[in-house]
Length: 161
Image 1 (cartoon, rainbow, N blue to C red):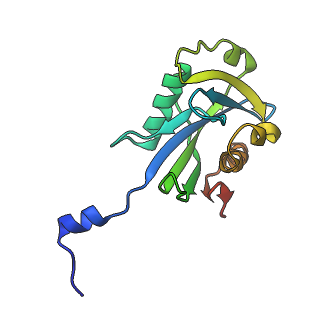
Image 2: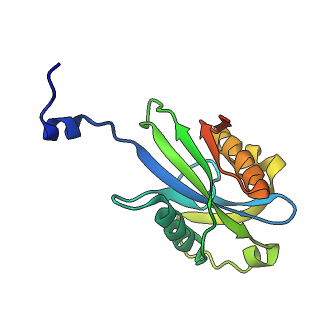
């Protein structure tokens, strides 16, 4: 068996996109969703990781950039493998526990990021009407993990074990 030279081997390695988001929720199992200006579906605070950026750093940075919130994040709740589609390569999505948020806190947010049109606390049972199906599945798992203190591994939003 012939081995590739190391530099050639490194160039041949698969590259995955990575994103990280934050689950903020109230006591009634509602989750904070943001309405982005650049896509039709709502989302959670978060986004794509920059080069050389750890996912937890991405989540905290995006939470601050999008909503002006600075807080220590809790543990990861979900790690999700997202299969490729015709437009995007496969990826890994993280959801971190952002802890509780009250309606008064949401009402007090000063939205200055032009990418964010609005925010809303949405009951988990209604999330699927606003977000992509894979994110709805991922958020349902994340809410369960936040309640139990676990970490879920998912494939396209489906809890694998």
